[in-house]
Length: 444
Image (cartoon, rainbow, N blue to C red; front, side):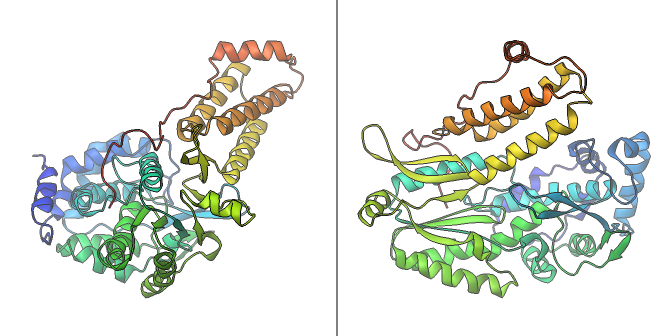
């Protein structure tokens, strides 16, 4: 019989301090495991056992029944995650990625589906990353309208150095224990955290961190920062501010807006102390206090300098004006992201051009361009989107004409091919005009 997960959410909403002492049976429920299997996307890289979703699904009924039995008798043991490195956009560095075995992904998703019912009630509105029904564009929208309409004169942008690699397991279990009293759930999560990492054929123990790549890691990270940052800012720091103060977080990337410089400076100082308590530290190269708001452009002109800008979620925010001369917050694709996306497109075209027919290459390039526009095509960013579209066209024309001995394209024939494939225009997808009527939730 299927267990209704919404019962947990209803109880969590009614009793905000309730500690759930019996929810493990929701995790082991067969219907929950089946739903978790359906949630996982196919075609993903396998873990150390080499099993894919397709392979696991060949005898799915027996595999899920066996998994449910092992979970019920506490006999399930997660395997070490496979450590891989992926390029970091706009940088020569590489980001570590943990690839769990498929069955471990399945269990992680089953646990996440249960815990989401509790923590989606608890999480504050200022948290946006990796949450169902909440997007980066919603965060950008509310941020723009807050700066536009509230008394904001200073912005502090910040980042946590290597956050996912430095989460303390003991602190995470303590935080979870405030709402999860079922020792079996906590023991299962502890085993996942301590499952180990395999790199170059060698396995080492996991002393700290939540490897990026698992289904449960984003939720656990949000729980950690909910207690470390979100509640601290909302219930303690903000109440001590002399003026207005606002806070926005997407995963480990966050910023705060203030009316007075004194509050902004105090936030920077106390933030470092707050993070240090939980064995975290600020990434100094990505942390700064700047003057930003309706008077920033005027003050910068008076001092003979350019107005300061900040970057959040891939967009550079800058002070500008409407045609009528009123202050307006505007955004454009950050130069770092713009260059990284073009570099990525160039490398893909260079690698793929000889392995695809022209029509297939055109369609795949169109899909990639659409993916870029679906994120970056926001209010006031048309010039950058048009520029990216033009640059992609130039790259595509260049590499189509470097396909071994195949006949080259003239520019006229190339334009006809783009029209044939339905080449997208750089039109606004997300209306984030800060002057429009506000919609959605209030800021925390």
